[in-house]
Image (cartoon, rainbow, N blue to C red):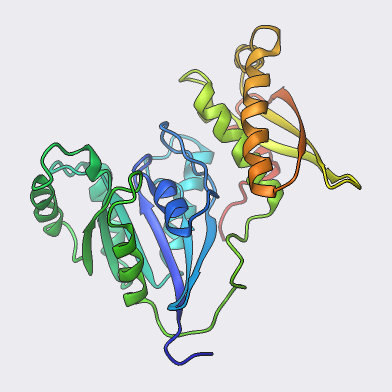
Length: 300
């Protein structure tokens, strides 16, 4: 191990839809976490790895912290909060605003109980007409929590993201390389494929459906010629939703499948034959059995 090599863990937290997954994907230079304009996209903790000559950052992208409405919601909040106990630095993402609502105050309260350095990341600064406004937002947040650093960024437009990596390294301890240099995530390919299918469904479906869907990979086999056959189920909570997901003459399901297949092929570097089915499991988000079956295993 080099004496000046740094390595450690950084958690991204924040309310739903503040851009955590977009920022993480950008920092590691590859798409692993799914992104969507709809909130609460990330359900599990996703671990990704960034390596350069300075060291290695293992990012934990967590589900948005929000008021839970069902067992799935409680699970998501527990995942996010437990991540804070295991990391060397916390990145709290917020949107540019002087209004600090109950959701942010709840997160500030949680952060007040941890000794880990917290970097406040004011994201989406590309949406500001006057860039000087960001100083007002920085001042407003300074009163809420004792931050190690405050950084304004645009994850979408890659503004100030290099500064972000620099600051994370500043707070990491000297240590070993945890993963090989070419490792980008510890997520199994099946899980990434399921998440990419869910992302396409989130983007293409009507407003009321996405939160009630899960995706399971039933089979994933490689042929001798290197092509992959993937069979997946999109699980929804109502018969009426099943009809919308399938669409007229199967048109919506075909759209979701085509968009997901292209992304999975890009990631795997191989051709993919993707087959999708739709199943109804009523109220699965309130069933511990179904949640475990769909990969949402409660944190100990």
